Length: 66
Image (cartoon, rainbow, N blue to C red; front, side, top):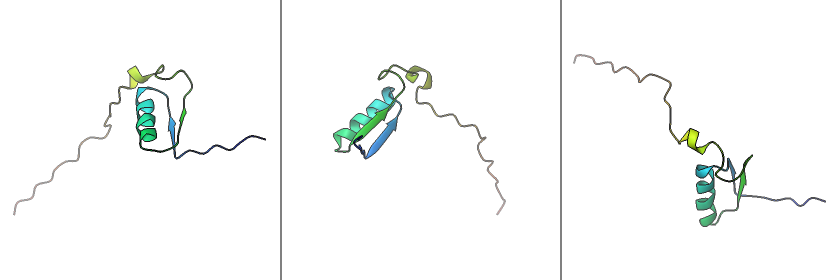
């Protein structure tokens, strides 16, 4: 019979960012499970770089005369 494991937090991705998040969650007392398809910090971390891409244009500002 398989034992059931439980976690407070599940981190998907074992790159540098995922492992850092898991580390800090564990340091705060949470039970953490990290899921990754390769070695820790050995994936596409360098490609992702944690950047945000905004794909929508900024809203137009409509100014009305008062």
